[in-house]
Length: 323
Image (tube, rainbow, N blue to C red; front, top):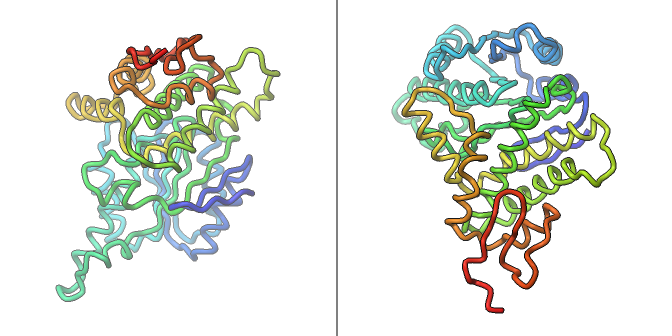
């Protein structure tokens, strides 16, 4: 098992799900878990494995997330559960939408606890200490944008999940279409991060590693990868792409969030990246195009170090080369 400690403790290994979840529950002495499950995962092996990892938890309250339910509905349900018995941990798994519901539940529970304190004890610094533990177990979609949330208390950037468990075996049944959508969105996120002007070397390093993994996986000239290795690289790249967004929300992510709020539903981020990212990066005149070209294995145009005539996206020179 590999443990990486950033803002969150990250478990990343094949078949680590049950062991990691059981170890975290035991170590933190968690007695009551609020488990959020997408309706599509109710009958599958994923839910059974999560429940197996919670075998030492005294009480588990299961909430099935359907497309018709909003985060506010789930947040209200979490308040009712908290009123009946204190929730020690919120566990959200499977989809980005379900994980977003989980951070809404955490926000609602900590707000309810804060309001119950006497006036003298209400200290903003204490509000963070009132949060229940929050574990996320991403599927093929990965994690939601860490910065996009209507309230800063709900976002991953200011209140990250305590534990992230990434087990490539949970995506063994993913279709080629799902993998392709994930690759498109992850590549878009990484390129968006590298095209941003802010200074964040850690985020840039995560984005570069994510792109390198995707490039290696899609290289027609490279040796054929074993299915397990391919899925491991997909999940690792997806995790890196999401963590790299701590550098700041990109234009495509922001537009997806804004358009989704306007029409009242989630939009396809992978499709928006394919349609819009190339022009976004072109307009931003990203300074690291030569480095991105090296990572993806696409040589720059002869005699012009600032251009990249690759397949997608396309970065024109715009006359910056003085040769």
